[in-house]
Image (cartoon, rainbow, N blue to C red):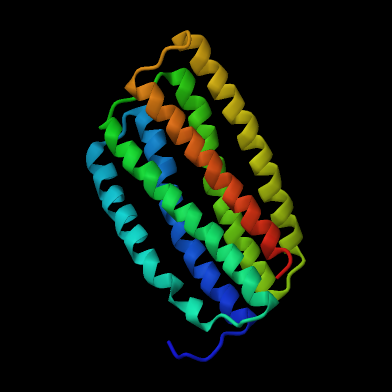
Length: 207
């Protein structure tokens, strides 16, 4: 990669490449939470887990384009989006680590339904963010629709989080064992990812 400054199209392509990998990692997380619910094969998860951590490590080099960002308003917007993408991947890594601590144990089905709703919507949100970058690259009008979808999903995730917190409080009567604690943490981190995706999308709409 040369030291020549990147133009708008090249920068958006770089962001799209980062999101492509983040969609994949988010998909691994979503499938794992489904496997937790339906007791899927551990061997299959171990393979996906290795791919997920490999993807996380591989993402570091994807930010090397930062030294070629122009020093202007567009460069500032690019750095803002990049910051949110870094937050997304760091949070995904934390979720992967927390899933490891569960070691194959499953949560109560009443919790899993809500958790799966949140994880699948987060995955959908990141995928939509990637599509939005592509639409912005080619100047397609669908970018505005993508933004609306991302905002809608964020609202739904917020609502799902309220539901699952109430479920936990009612079922556990305010007490929480290790699994419930980890579930709360995973849900909270997924909600943070949703917030980062929304913030990135709002900035992208100006690029």
